[in-house]
Amino acid sequence: MRISMQLLIAASVLAAAPMMDVIAAAAPAYPTRPIRIITATAGSGSDVVARMIAMRLTPALGQQVIVDNRGGGGVFPSEMVAHSAPDGYTLLYYSSTHWLLPFLREKAPFDPIKDFSPLTMTVALPNVLVVHPSLLINSVKDLLAAAKAKPGELNYASGGAGSPSHLAGELFKALAGVNIVHVPYKGAAPALIAVLSKEAPIMFAIATNVPPHLKAGRLRALAVTSAKPSAKLPGIPTVAESGVPGYVVVSDYAMWAPAGTPALIVARLNKEIVRILKLPEVAEPLANDGIDVVAGTPQELLAEEKADMARMGKVIRDAGIRAN
Image 1 (cartoon, one colour):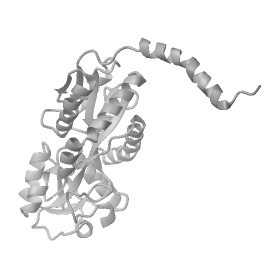
Image 2 (tube, rainbow, N blue to C red; image 1 turned 180 degrees about the horizontal axis):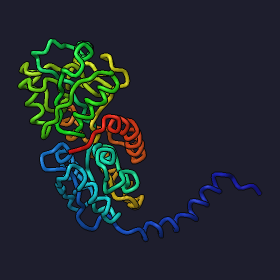
Image 3 (cartoon, one colour; image 1 turned 180 degrees about the vertical axis):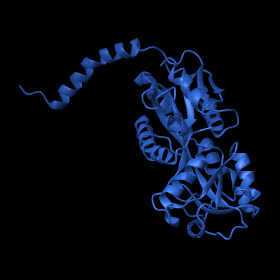
């Protein structure tokens, strides 16, 4: 007598069901106590998005999710989480600085790949290449021509050695083959003030900081550093399409747990965080600020980390960059 394939599959599922129930019952409940998200200082870009996520994770998980702000330029937050128990109760929320730190410091106290379980990418924030309006530079091509005509005479400001604006400038120099001089400041705000005062008249500024100055005519935008034009800055081309092929720089933000966190916990956190980021009340305000939601799988985050480490690691090594 022949038994159909459908009956065999059904019988196999029924036979496996009790075992699946036993495994589910044996898995520890999660969460049963508050969860901490370790991130950068209060008011930073990391902090703002971490709080948007935390306030919605609390009802979703049935436990308080607390944002714990720490200084240390990314080293201390990452180190804390790397050395925490892999139980899903201590998470890291940080920018791509997290995975570039081993290149920026002589000795980092953690490995961004081996010491973490990736959860998800969250958002991406481009920079905007801006100049003081007194410069006779209206496009990237004008900037390239000026830089090649007077190598070493044009200065660009950044928020400090190893900052996103510094790395954006060094990648531009490497791909365009120009010599513009880096002038570091103690943070993005002082650097932007320097550009506004013409002290260092060029900057790869954070996209969320420039619209008021563009509207008032205090800055001129030449291009955005993302792969695609920004809806928040209509009419402004990308650097890549303006004469520097292959140029793309964005500040990626993501969430991690310590390495060894159980797969069921990783899957649940990924599912909830991705759902939250796609809620209209989260995604729309971010988009209005020029911030793109790029939530995805843990595997996509890991691939992005490795690709960016390979590309920007070379830029950092070649330029001899060391973080402050």
